[in-house]
Each structure stands twice: as C-alpha cells, then as structure tokens.
Amino acid sequence: MPNDQPPRPAPLDPPMVPFAVAGLIAWAVVGLVLLVFFRGWLTDHDHENWLWTCLAGFLWGFPGLAVMLRHDANRRRRRAN
Image (tube, rainbow, N blue to C red; front, side, top):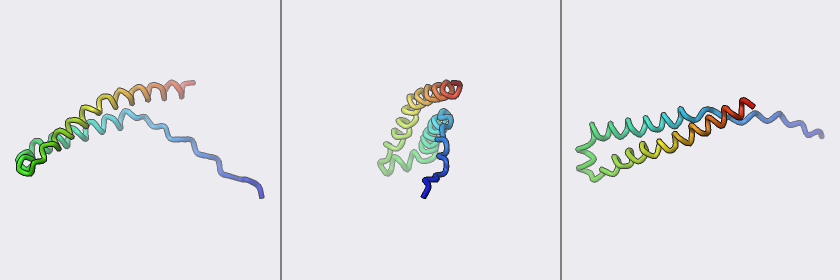
C-alpha cells in the first residue's frame, strides 16, 4: 500500500505586534473600568489587588511588545530571503 499523505500546510506565522498591542489595551481598559466603576466594591471586599494585577499586566506588556517587534522584524527578514 503506497504511503500517500497529503502535503503538510505551511505553519502560520502571523504578525505578532497587534496581539501585544491588544493585550496592552485590554489590561489598560480593564484596569480603568475597575478603577472608575468598581473602586468602592473592590475596597469593600478587599480586592484592591485586582488593580495591581491590571497594572502589572499592562507594564509587562511593554517588554512583550519589544519582543514582538523584534520577532516581526526577523519574520520580515526571513520572508525577504
């Protein structure tokens, strides 16, 4: 019996900067919503750490964005060759 396998599809290699920017925006929006609309509830229920979590997610997004910028530059270089 012949070994007829379908050709493998090329791996996905999408640009990653939009994902990093979306993550930054998501953490910022969630943090602002919690700060503006739920500040009293967070304080009453001892959940102020949620705001710190949003801040940490937002700030850690910047090193992630730098990594994704480098990844996309390498991706463009690979495709140019």
